[in-house]
Image 1 (cartoon, rainbow, N blue to C red):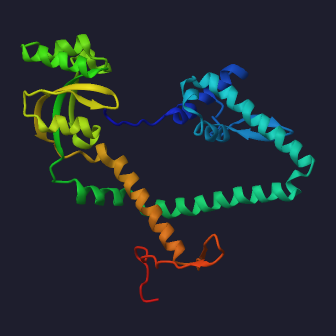
Image 2: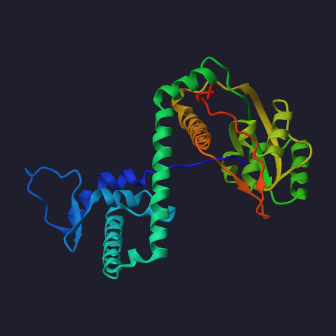
Image 3: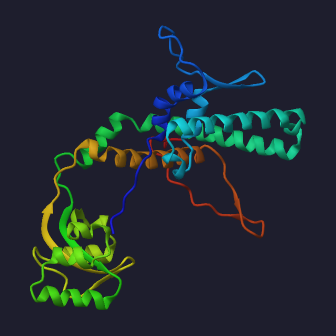
Length: 300
C-alpha cells in the first residue's frame, strides 16, 4: 500500500573500490611510494587512452540488475565495453560514415540534445542551491506541524469471504496481531500486520480513507478492497506528525525546486523566440499568450 523509492550508490562504490580491484587483477602492485593517479588509464586502443573517469560515467547508466555485481567483476566488463566502443568508432571513421548525410544528421541531433541539456542543467544549478533549499524549508516546514497520521495494523487476504471470516473472529475476541501472523499474505504479517505511522497520501486512497475514519482501537467492520486484495484494518492511534528535519525532506525539496526551475527555463526561452503552430490543414493555430517567466522584464 505504501509508495517508496530508492537511490543506487553503485557509481560511488565503483569510484572507491574499482581502481584497487582493477590493479589487483591486471598488474602487480605498484611500489608503496608511487603517487596514486586520480584518473588512471585503464586501457588503450590504437594508443588512445581510456580513463577511469569514463568507466565511472558508464557505471552511472547501468541497469538495476548490474548494480548487484561487485566492483571487481563490474570493472573489467565496463573496460571491455569501452574498448568495443573505441574499436567500433575507429572502424566507422575509416569508412567515413560520419560524412553520410543521415548519420551526420543523427550526430547533430545528439549534439543538440547534449547542448540543450547543458543549458538546462546550468540554469537549474543556479536556482536549486543550498540557500534555496533552506529558504523553502523555512517557509513550508520550519515551526509548522506535520501532517495528520495514523498508526495501524492490517490483515491482507485474497477474497472478501476470507476477510469477513477474520472480522467474525475479531468480533469474538480474537487477537488481531495473531490473526495477521497466521492469515495475512502481506510481507508485514510476521510483525502482526504492523504498518507504523503514516499520513494519508502515503497509502492508496481506499485504504487510507478507511484507516483514518477509525477511532483508536477500532477495526473495520466490513472488508476494504484495494488492488492488493481485501484488508481488515485496526487503528492503533492518531497523531500530528512532528516537524520533519531538513535532512529528512531536502531531497523532496530539491526535486520540487528542480521541477519549478525547469519550467522557469522553458517559459523564459519560449518568451525569447517567435512560435507558430500549424494544424493538420496547414493553417496557423492561434496561440494563447504565455504568462511571463519569473523575473522577466514586463516593460518590454
